[in-house]
Amino acid sequence: MPDEINPMQDMGLTHDKQLICEPQGFLIRNDCARMLCGHFIPKGERLYDLIDRYDNITSYVLNRTDIGHSGDAIRMVAPFLVAFGVSDYQAEKFFSENMKLMADAPHVVGYFRDILPSFYDSCMYDHAADALCSLTGLARESVGCTQLELDNAASDMSWDERSMLRKIAAELADLPIPTTRYKLNVPMALSKDEVDMVKALDDVFVRRLQGTSAYDMISEMPAVGANEKAYALLDIRKTTQIDMDGTAYIGGETIDYQALDLVKDGGGLAVAYNGSEFAVHGANVSVISESSLAGAVLVEQFYDTGIEGVYDLVDHWSRDGLKNYTKYPDPGLMDAMLREPDLPIVRRITQDNVSEIASESSACRKAIMSSFGNQ
Image (cartoon, rainbow, N blue to C red; front, side, top):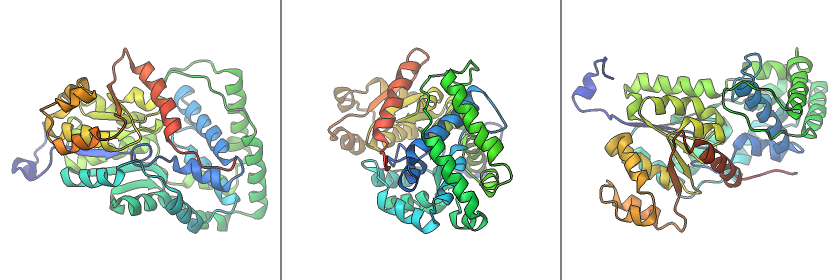
């Protein structure tokens, strides 16, 4: 960093670039908490979608601080998993058997490991993080995640409370899920369906669960949300002394918005990879692909030339343009991507095209991220 002394860097012994990424949507094609709910809870995917919608509306549209903190959905669904009898062993077994990797994910993980410091920060439960590391060769200590202790929580939850939570889950799963689109961090009037949904979930999480072990579990559970991701980015920056203009961040979750925006504003590479609508608004490059290779291609270019080099590469993004792009530092990696039957859709995000890209990317994310449920 310009105003700090880093003797190791002065001696040429450290990297000047680093990578931070969210694996969901980039390395794996699962929304892990959602598919866990879908397998163990009747209409569980719908329950998760409703709670996730509630989380996003209270956080980003209503800007409330009493319940929504963007990322709280993974906390809010946790007591329902306990109520339906999910154990830590069952969660671990489920993810080890059902996690689906994006094409080329293990190769990309190894590629990153060889060229620059890489950190993985995810909202996924630790059971899913263990499976991801086993499948890709990632070092477990390099992956931050949400800690979920199902067995401990089960010992604190009475049978009456479990019965109550099962009843609530059935009630919520039958509610309509609103689809109104709102602008990020712009307060505005909610639709009637949205108001009804917020009232129903407020009744559950603000009133009915007060004084229960479920409420304590939600309040005390250490989860990775939007604020935690932004803080982790700043902590990594402090530890590595690599500034934002040397940072590549790959993410696609709504809760990646703040971290992506910090990197973008600092002159780094902020990639919305199969990004949600909000993630695209925080990024400077969008990727839509069922393979992880495009991420490696962009990060390699960033490692070699910085953000302006990435923009130049993206400006040439077509099969012919990339075949003739003589400035790319790793022709073998480029050739591997060009051998794929479908060229990833990669675009630079500007004020003029962000809404169009956000809408398309969000729709593609839903199609790419696997559904796993019993409804």
